[in-house]
Image (tube, rainbow, N blue to C red; front, side, top):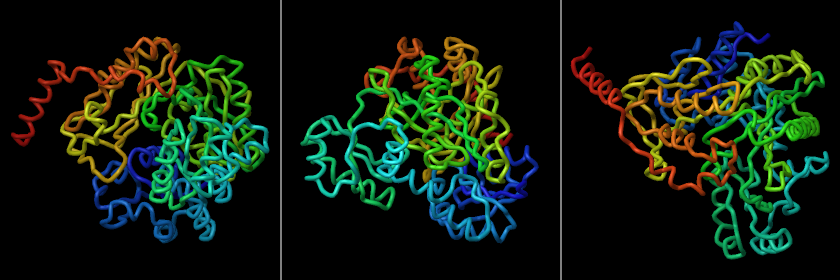
Length: 472
């Protein structure tokens, strides 16, 4: 097994990997910018090393990170999600320096990171994809011709896109003309490449993704699906496993498609194959994420499989410990991304000092985060503060438990998405387990929730303020 892992990330996912390392008897090495000097991942790691004053440059410098891993005696690098997690150069640099990269090969990362190449690979394997342009678009005129052939509405997408960025829906030729240069600009700034392509827009789909695991010994399995349809501007907010919107036959079919997709590109380690389901309940391949996902927690919750531990074991050359028929699931799980944002103010980021924090607990509740009372939320990074994960045997109990857990959570000093999620959980369509990616746009009334605090919350906040002033 590996002896020491450098975690090339920060915040919640770094803490998650540190915990897995601790349970496996592996030392962990954290990295941090000056803005992250007092972050929880720095406090929990066995070792921690400064990246300097720039809040972002250090986390994005492949060669400095690899050199640091070698210099500090690490034998592996875990990229987490975001930052360099889907950058093939990090995997290549690790290989050159004799380090284990905890993820798929650089070749697979590059192939799946190119959306047009990924589409071709899936078509060749027999995985259904949405109709789209044959490849990257050479010009606006080519885009207009392709859109006429495909039929409006279309999705204009960055070829190297990810995380919901570099995507625009175009309902007609005028919208395509208006958005073409915008998407190219977004793609160039975010991903360093100006290539874009077109796909037919699947109107109000369900967004369903499947978790896969594959080792270096020819074993590949799926761990069921996650429903990510509750999202805003292509950014996931609430995730559910398994989807309450699929029947068992659809579940098995989709899992088989995901394994077929992974095998088609010789995938290894943990990955996610994402699909859209249309109104006729047809599935279409969207993309493959070649890393651990933010929402991996709910798959762990229903299957009992520690996905980060499996990542590390696979990277170390060990075979999977289970076959497909040995993977069971029990109940439902739901994850809430608790973001430092003000939903009532167009989801404006809300940064500052967390004056008081306590995580929810009780049966079937898990909280993954990197915050604490007194933590100063920096303005340089993603706004996610924590993830609240709940589990229950059935859907109705899951929704009720989710509402209770969010009510129990105390997080003061910054505005968060918690009350917005509580409003969503009360909506009859959501409680019925029927929703699409257009759910939030169709229900703007969800933003009209009350901001009045409970009497006990106000009393506790006043007590905390008095204690802080008195130096207690």
